[in-house]
Length: 306
Image (cartoon, rainbow, N blue to C red):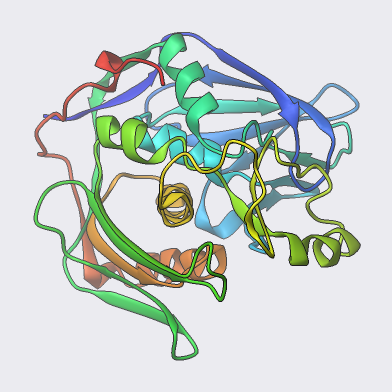
């Protein structure tokens, strides 16, 4: 039977926030059974403010997923949540410095989940003496934005998450891309973790006027100009943009607080639609059940850090 997992030791990261541009330190620590994932933000008085990674704490989904509780807001949580969910880590505390308190932001690192995967694997993943509970979808739900953006969460064949996702952008460097993904820690590390966030040069000025992307650069994002990809080393995968969208979706689905046993089909979805789908799913308990009698998957601890 599958059991819960946490870290064997702490993992430390330093970087800048993609949107705030502030230098930040982050430490991911082990946590007890049934803790889930929670962010602890250091206040100027030394007190830690807790922000749980739960649907009701989503406060913004413009270009990233932001969580808030009380006076504290944590921006850009999706990549570290994706890494934790991708490796099957159920319980962890994510401690963040907050030079712009009460605003904090997860460091963007290189724009992907790979640095987090590497650090978490080096810290070690350990089993805990409690069963893992899966959220098994039994009837489909569908959420749409207009006629051309939608996401459907339906019953899945196996006790894991499968994703069929399509993106479409009016730029030759991206265009229409489709991918199918069946989740396992090995698949996440190999197929998704290195896919970076991406954006278009033409949007950067507008984002910065809105106080966003202040820390963005070619070091932490794929930037697409009029002539194509501007990063000197090009893309890490031929279809890196659509893979990153799957990475984002996994991070946003992690807000359910349990591994999702379902098939997800998404068309031109983003953080806003993901958050709505999570809320709709939670709000329709007749469409899912909680199950614990699930075989233990292959251990993430056997992976080699990417």
